[in-house]
Image 1 (tube, rainbow, N blue to C red):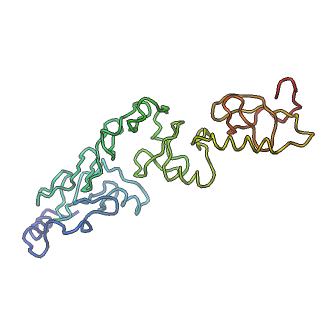
Image 2 (image 1 turned 90 degrees about the vertical axis):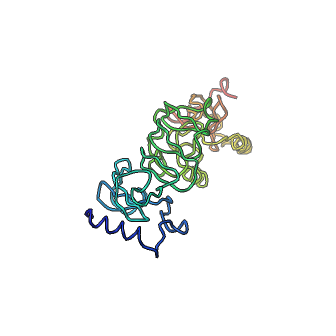
Image 3 (image 1 turned 135 degrees about the vertical axis):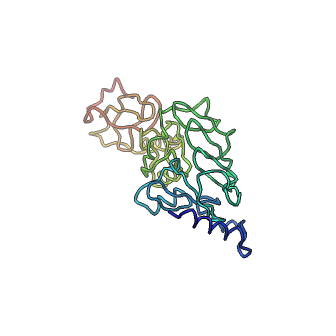
Length: 278
């Protein structure tokens, strides 16, 4: 912790020096890979200096709550001071976007806005999002009258990478079931051939074409004589209805919605009653 005399010395040197300008000459002169800003913060947890919480969390074995930060250091004049929008010494603005509730400063325009419901700052523009009280998160306005509410959904970790979603800088994907996952994790799931929500197993995409293909595969793949009249009880993971269908090795099709996203229930196959099944 530097004393007041040292702080004044640094301040006077920065303000009188003609060799170093108070304003950075390029964007690379300040900030980090996560944010462009003219300040660094003193961590309340370990009393170290970092440009942002992501830089801190990458280096330390613990995380920092940026709302608990009380001190900043100006990168232009090196003055240590309480959290505020502008430097008390050289009067530079720490970020073109400033949120003193979140202690967030950013010189890049990302259409940032603070959401009181989420309790954090979001990017993308306030007019493009609405806050759903039940989901407890901001959603695109297109979903305002047509989304599946899942209570406090963003406060659960991504079911793929198990990392936090609510404060993540990675965009999230919102499937029809309403369970969130990182967009990058969603793309990795599809790439690896997994098309069901990791949380509830509902199909993540419109699977009509695949179900039609499986219909053709079932028709072109006759079952052995000893199995062709067996039936099984299934549960559909898409419509959540149970039905009794003919057993087939290719897939078991839901009689209610036509989905092959099903699972067996109630034990082993049994001989079918020809009067009840087609």
